[in-house]
Each structure stands twice: as C-alpha cells, then as structure tokens.
Image 1 (spheres, rainbow, N blue to C red):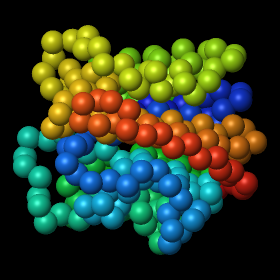
Image 2 (image 1 turned 45 degrees about the horizontal axis):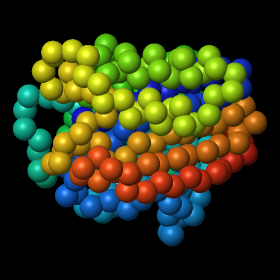
Image 3 (image 1 turned 180 degrees about the horizontal axis):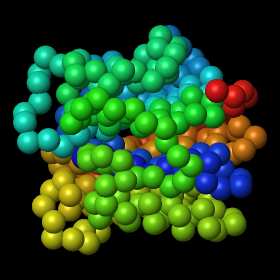
Image 4 (image 1 turned 60 degrees about the vertical axis):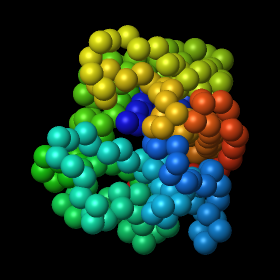
Length: 243
C-alpha cells in the first residue's frame, strides 16, 4: 500500500520534489537503487520477481512511479507486470506515456518527461490527464484522494518547501512517520510508514531536482523489523528540460 507526494513546478528553487514509500511483502526480492548495467542513464531499484521497478528516473529527463489500485476483485495472476511499464519508459523503449492498458492489474502511474507531467490509470476505465503544477498525493486510490496518510504526507512536504534551509533528511523523516491518526480500515487508515514483518514499508525514496536540472535521489531500505538495511544516494542532471 504505497504512498507518495510530489511538488511539481510548485517552488521557485525546486522543479520537482518527490517523496515515496514502497510497501511490499518482505519476501519479494528487490535490488537496491543503482544505475542499471544495461542502461546506465537509468537510476532505479529493481523488482527481481518481474524485472521492472516501482520508481525510477533517467538522465534524459524522465521519471516514473507506479502504485497499485485497491479494488475488491482479486488480482489477475496472468496480467502483465506493472513495473514493466516503468522499465520501458525509463530505458527509452517507450517514448511517451504508455496507453492505460487493461492487460495490467489496476494501477496508477505518474510520469514526467521534460516539462510535462501526467497521471495515468486504467481503473475504473483508462484515463490519462496532465498533472498541473502544485503539490499532489497518491496512494492506492485515485490522485489526491484524501486518505489520512496522503493528506499528512502532502502537508509534511508543503512544510518542508516552506523552510529556506530544508535538507533531504527532513523529507526522509516525513516518510518515517508511523503514526496512525484514524480508525479507518486498512488501507485507508494505514500510516505513512507501515511496520509489519510480512507486508510493510520496504524503502523510502526522495527525489529533488532544482530549476537548473541538478538532481539527487536517495533511497533508504528497511528490514522486516523496520530496521535500516542500507542507504543509497545518487546525483544526476537533467540537462535538457524541454519536452
């Protein structure tokens, strides 16, 4: 039950600030954030079960992040990998936002390409729309659904943007918030950071890109006991920010 917030063209210093937690089964193997050996312009972790990723960027000015949609119907085990959508976008095999195909289990997808950003979903019906400048939040419902953790993370991001000396540690602290502030059922009522030995927060990621195109991506990884397992920081540059 992932959660993210992003500020897109919402600050005079920052072109993009994104904060995200990936929640997944702890026994699903994943490789940490790195430059991909077969495409070293891609910076992302990797889901070793499918070969795709949940969040990544490329030095060609692209970023993509996906979340599952929470629906009552069981997932189709024969559906295509949602992480494969991101792999194709980031490696350049797909030069545009992918069509919201019904061959995938329900998903939400945010893509950035140069100066353009978009939100795509395939549930309840295929839809792609431009992402307006501002602060947005996303979990396992549609964009900016007011789940408590989405609202809380957007507020934390807005507060960070309001501080002149803001450091990325403050964003990572926001992603570590494990307070449950509602009695609403899971997943609506789950905290930003989920502590669970079977299915919980696997990693926290922060991406910042300033108006000059200088970028930083930081990933913190966690054990099933919610202990720090490792951290990776990579710098990059979006040299051409034209669409």
